[in-house]
Image 1: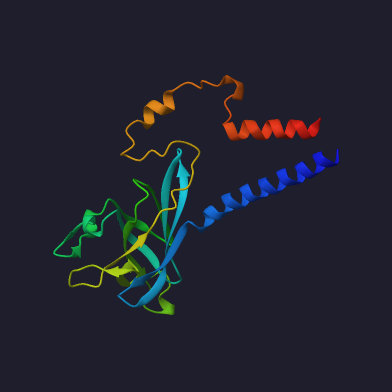
Image 2: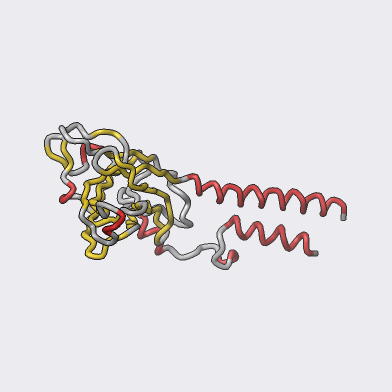
Length: 216
């Protein structure tokens, strides 16, 4: 009985380590300043990794401080900064993959971008932000500025910037559906050849057995 108690304590410790590992995925994020007019701090752009349909995905959120609002957003993501839409080193926001114009100005805008690989990723996040020119002009949006998420300068002659991020490629509970993994669909359709697991993973099946042992 004493041995069972000791083994049970080891089991609890291992489970705690497992939970800690899952919480560590919260570190898979990055936040940079959103600058308007080159040097006005108007908010942030936050990047984090989430799972969408078992696929590691980047959640990229623009968020501005009072009294600023977001009127337009343009976002592009690439594994090479030269692949971001540009001409002569100057980015072309109108050609970015993700873009919206907001008739009702926003305080926050979020995009979800599927990860194509675990390689270093480069993000160009552009916005048009607006604000009242004075406190007595509440809801009169007569100031407009272009804004970029802080980072490295493009090679052109303007002040546009992009930032980098190396994905954690979090475990989303299935095959990573990256484009280069052409056999992923076939793997998903294969039947479970170990019906004794009742559809559970091997690790989960082992946990069930250990737990049953302690409950005897």
